[in-house]
Length: 242
Length: 89
Image (tube, rainbow over all chains, first blue to last red; front, side, top):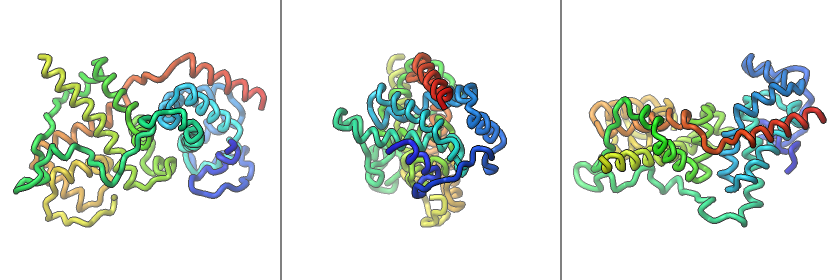
């Protein structure tokens, strides 16, 4: 699919159609700072594009890698995304935020490229999970029967107030969390990066990924739990070492 | 999920159910009855209290993690490609 076709579908789920050139009037539905940024981008202000690339490039690469499983291809996808953004800015109507629109373009391109690249990758790169079947937490941690069925048999050990700070200060802990994120199946990784890393609103995440809010929270929770579990394993290792 | 009303606030919720609702609860995407039900459970269950706190910490931590995939030379390459494209426009 070419860039023009992709980016006309600004509001995801809407059929492609020819949109009027709106370049002279920034959309009023956008916040003022975003309207100003859009006006600069439409004037081909290199500094404005530079700021945009700096802000989103890392997250775009990280997400693209989940779909294509190869760093070089991910870089190509992201570069193609930026080219499409430049070509299609005049057709951006502001019904979504600029960020939602850019990430939507990237996801579309990454999925398209991922399908073509899939034969070159291993099955584990495209691990999927069954949202209906998979429990967020290992069921063996709960009582299976009796009066306490469904309640903790092996509850998590509490973290103290300083634990998050200590985790961030530990290179090993940071690596463990990053590894857990990189190992997520793409459906989980997409929601975690958009919602928690990029801070995109839940509704916008649903628009970008074309999923329901129920799907979003099922996926988001499983992603957060896998990172929590990585931290738990790291902390258990620290305790054993003492 | 936000409008779930399948379980009355008076019914007891299990730890396993609280775990499944945790992220929606933290994002205030649960109905009022479910919210009260979870809050009541959390007031009495240390295990779930610890769990919900840990998920909230993870949510906040992932935003602060130094990203290992960012490479200055690579984003510079993209910046140059963007600049070249803009000049051709």
